[in-house]
Amino acid sequence: MHSGSTHPALDRRHPERSRFSGVGRDLARTKRHAEIELQHYPRPHMNTAAATQTFQLTVQGYSLEILRIPGHIPHAPELVFLHEGLGSVSHWKDFPARVADATGSPVTVYSRYGSGNSDLLTEDRAVTYMHDEALIVLPDLLAQLEIDNPILIGHSDGASIALIHAGAQDRVRGLVLLAPHVFVEDLSVASIAEAKVKFLTTNLPEKLSRHHRDGTRTFWGWNNIWLHPDFRRWNIEEYLPRITCPILSIQGIDDQYGTMAQGEAIAKQSAGPVEILALPDCRHSPQRDQPEAVLETITRFVSRISGNKSNQTGV
Image (cartoon, rainbow, N blue to C red; front, side, top):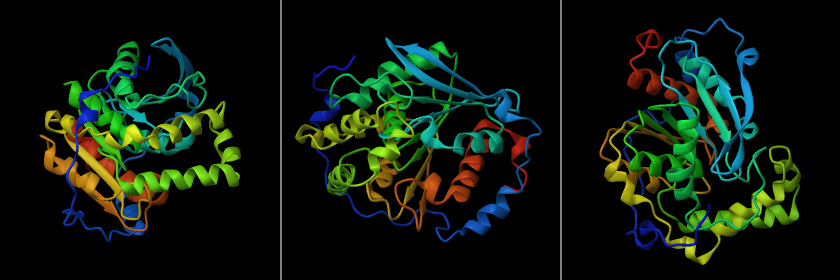
């Protein structure tokens, strides 16, 4: 499934990025403000937990863990969640269910090969592993689940996969990017090297074992490739001009794995409209550090691009 061949995107160098400034939104929005605005959205009267489905699906020869949550608004677009490098279905916790509840859209969450309760990783990851996921695995999964024109919600590696997929496929309604990467920064490499030390000296293996069949394999599969010298040339900016769908990019100002230069590149180079939300007091996981602000912003974005008038009260 994974090949060692060089992808065109890996041969590209990128110029230095300036710090991001002027995002066009009120970055001082407080959690309380977000909670008040979120109350404008109608809540469904259904037992979401009872209707949720969890199952295994064979995709490109691997058994993948799938979670599906029904929506309560007819014809609402499907939201497909793509987790971070060390993420999984359970690692998202209740966030996908809260997004389904707030937007009325059906939600699909899955654990990639080597993560969660999907098949165990049996080989080293290639530099092209995110390209493989975006260009081979994700199209197969969407086709099998009969999901057309989805909104992709990706975190970190998952956000990069969403960008590659949208740049190669003209069948994506919108992108929600949480802490995306489009090129490798020194900060990213330094923090991933620090994560290696934490894995060897703290209870991080125990924490990962709560969300993965084999947390050790999952960790080294992610850590080894990001610290590989060849990965420093990884770059997906060539896909950005091909993306015409609306994009919402959410970044923590205190993100330890990436700077606002990532969002700046997406805003400058993408062909479609891009909205940037930079959150204070927020690190690499906006959905955890600022959940109410992130939920409110995603709900607005989904409502706007899907044309669900019933969810636009107070917007």
